[in-house]
Image (tube, rainbow, N blue to C red; front, side, top):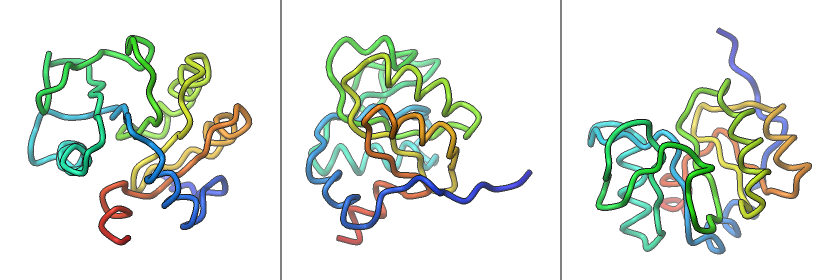
Length: 141
């Protein structure tokens, strides 16, 4: 499997601005397993004062928050999607984020890149971050 290099990406200054401006983050692929990166990152974000919204195909509650089965199901505004899914899923996620109309940031976690989906999100007016971890970026401030 060939890894894709992110050609559509925010710079470090923009990443800091994003983390300062967003409040509600949908975590796509948030595992209930405490040993998984998605769980550790979501818990850290929650502890830093962000409202996290778990999106996962199973479970009713993760980290004390109601779990939604998909991004389209969330009945309130979200600022950012933080994606812990395979890059092949990014196209569909971008389409739903665009259709929602409220998502300001499309964020693919460390090691996750899909330039076509990222460009689609950027063309729709979203800021895009790929191959970066929200937890690491906050810790490195």
